[in-house]
Length: 367
Ligand SMILES: Nc1nc2c(ncn2[C@@H]2O[C@H](COP(=O)(O)OP(=O)(O)O)[C@@H](O)[C@H]2O)c(=O)[nH]1
Ligand SMILES: [Mg+2]
Ligand SMILES: [Zn+2]
Image 1 (spheres, rainbow, N blue to C red):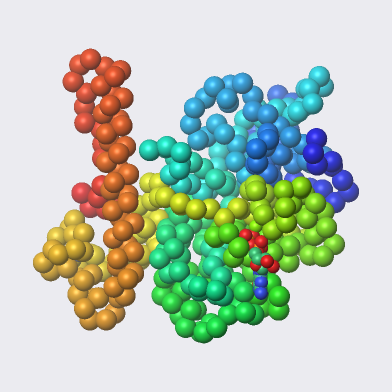
Image 2: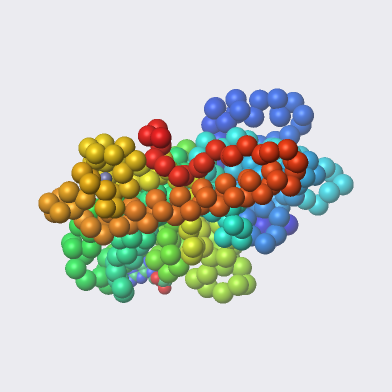
């Protein structure tokens, strides 16, 4: 076991276990299984935390054999584990149904889905104010993914202590974030930390999302505090070099909930994100109700209320461009999924395959 149970190991309740999870767990307890939360996924077997401490756990054979995203444990998952006496490792017997799931298109596959994090309540979408400054387009994409997860997004703009034109950048972020809260933060001066802390009360789970180097791990260390930081440092940095987060990892915030650190992710491609887009772009969504055509793509269609808003200066042209690019990405994903479904049906059936239902190829509820 790479991480010994120690006196500061959080309890299940501190990790977010609740009455409602207990109810979900139900009969699994009768089989002698115990609840645990997946706290780290790296190249080894998942690290899980039971009420007794941390241990590595391998998936049961029936989970390995089941394909699909529900059968692979990710950080944040609640699982049922058994502890066979003859075995070094615990065994993950079941993964409890997820309340929220942060998902992207699997970068290794044409049309697969990949779940990265489960059961989080808040996603902090982070960008640095220093250096090249705010990237509004990236922010919009990450907000779509955050909304789609089912969690509440919050924008955190980091490194305010070394940034220029903070007010301008904040205004730009607020335009992209729409009604999502924007917090300006500095891990050096402590600006914004208390506000962030209030969003992670006991029982809640938060995830940090953002490019490499924006300050995610530094924020985790600030939230966790000096005393616990030493333990975390040993644990998160291993021997793999400082300042590199190689794994997704969940840690307990003293007097608060838990926070999940992630490595900077490139290529966050959308997966089934129609709702996420609608929620991240409520302004465009409601304007499009006024377009002449129900399936208006806000390109060169006549009577487009969205483009009119751009012409009148009430909607940013770049924001519309961002929206359209994300929509196009979904349509293309839907097309690839259709092609794949067709090909699979051709293989498995001799007699005329039915056309699969399109996905992501139009706006929800308007076809
Ligand atoms: N000046 C300043 N530097 C910061 C701040 N937050 C993080 N850093 C530095 O930015 C670098 C990357 O931070 P890190 O937390 O490893 O980023 P991550 O890749 O998002 O986890 C480190 O050298 C940090 O010390 C901040 O608020 N202000
Ligand atoms: Mg990091
Ligand atoms: Zn339109």
